[in-house]
Image (cartoon, rainbow, N blue to C red; front, side):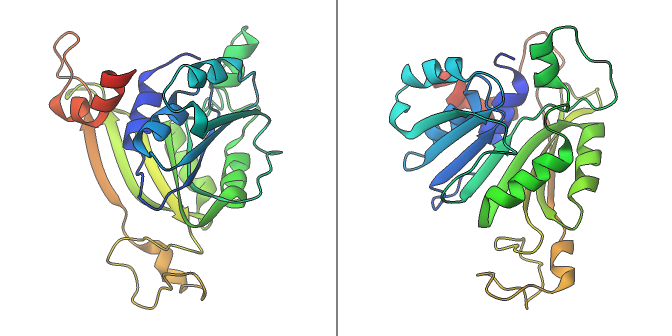
Length: 242
């Protein structure tokens, strides 16, 4: 899969905090999102992992200004090991569950949740995410609801942006950001006052029920090839520097 709107949106939308030093891109493909994170976080080291060949991602990184801070591994994320957990994990995962697969095996692996079921993605995030870390993902609307159900009680939604292609069309994608349900270190301000910010004490059961921040983004104005100012503002660094 080549560069597409989904990857650009996720790479621009994912929250990058000053303290985030280790980042992981699951299903990195050509390395697009990993490079966007390296561009946005000058002090961070970014790793991309993919079940398919990562040679093109390595070529792209080598041709970029951030080659010294980006690395790639060809490995199923279910088997990926790391000495330290990650402060930020992002993924533009394969998402089709019930639809027909494509005769092209590469496109099937990239588009269908055959090699990375949602439960496996959730478990990988829980295993690799640091306490207080964030996980950001982009999915079509129906698959987003499925993923939320898979994550219930394990990963807590803290931020969501539904994406419309034009004002008159229904939302096509959901950008979602999660924290560990058992360690919501940076939950919204309405969380329980007893919730432990440093995770040294388990938070109360109702802490994961804090209301997430919800917004909407419209990509196009409805006119031919005319983007909205909000979309241009979100993705301006990508279009300036790639």
